[in-house]
Image (cartoon, rainbow, N blue to C red):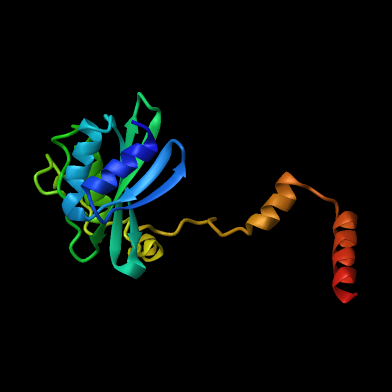
Length: 194
């Protein structure tokens, strides 16, 4: 089933989905949360998307929403589809798909820990994954203050400082002697004065 035909079938089966075709072998479809597991199951069983490549999330704090994206791959057609689901940030809960692919439980555990998105019933979803003993809000949420956390948690080390990346590049990667620098500055200054 070619991408265009598959997308038409998906739209007919799940009204209200929004599609975005990026290339002939890549499309994204946004479906309501209530239809997501059924759409993913249909893509796997009827569309030939038998490989779950990834589940990822984006925090759209301005819209008070998370966007989950399930990347599915069709080996026979050599194409991918990203099925997107929007979740309310205040109650980020999504049905688990671990019954479709066992690997989904690993992605779901990571998303629970990093974003706070819950997947009830997913094996070990409430166990620490990477952040054992973490007591802060999930660190991938955009309202997590990384700088504040680092300053409160880690002690300052002597000799540590902030460097200007432009200056470092000039000095280490593109060394120029003082005469050339002065000439460059003069030329730039002359250009602005004209």
